[in-house]
Length: 225
Image 1: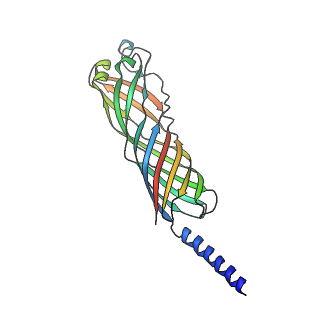
Image 2 (image 1 turned 120 degrees about the vertical axis):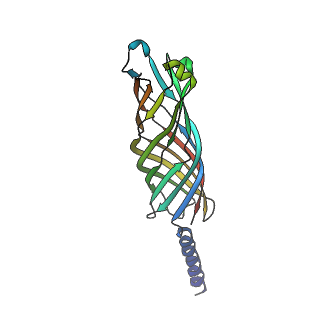
Image 3 (image 1 turned 30 degrees about the vertical axis):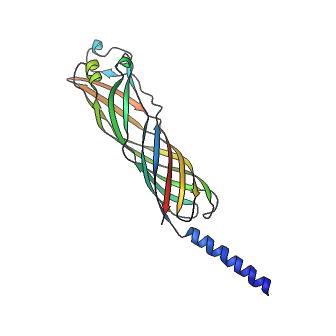
């Protein structure tokens, strides 16, 4: 009888621990995102005389780092809804080809909220849980400004416009529980991000397309409630 009582007490303790570990369905997170781009873009086309846009003339875009914030809601023991965003980072745009010597020809900011449905491996009470996710990314470009060197290269003040982008996204990551509320979170994500860019100098329009091919590396902390 004594052994039975001890076993029952241990079982109840384990059940209460699992219940306590599972009682928080929401997590807010904050940290750092590194946005690493592998852009592909053809040379500019132009509606003006060819000598005003000598070839090859193209661009490439630099990486950026920003602050991460997000929210996760647990749907089941294995599935959760995950929203990831961040403070809009600013990217340098560099000239390529004949524009290469002009260095940074523009700057642009972007906001890219992304939603995922994640599948979490293991049990909800596990200290370490890897996960994979599929979702949708929305990227909006704003505050695109040409630099002085760009205006020299293009022959005058230039207005830059980039269209917004919608695309599929995917991620892999893991969470490590520090205690029942706090956790460390890390992930590697990518998304289909494409845009049409138009640079207008007077009556001359120069256009190109950009496939950003981003890799976003995140590291942060989560608080569950």
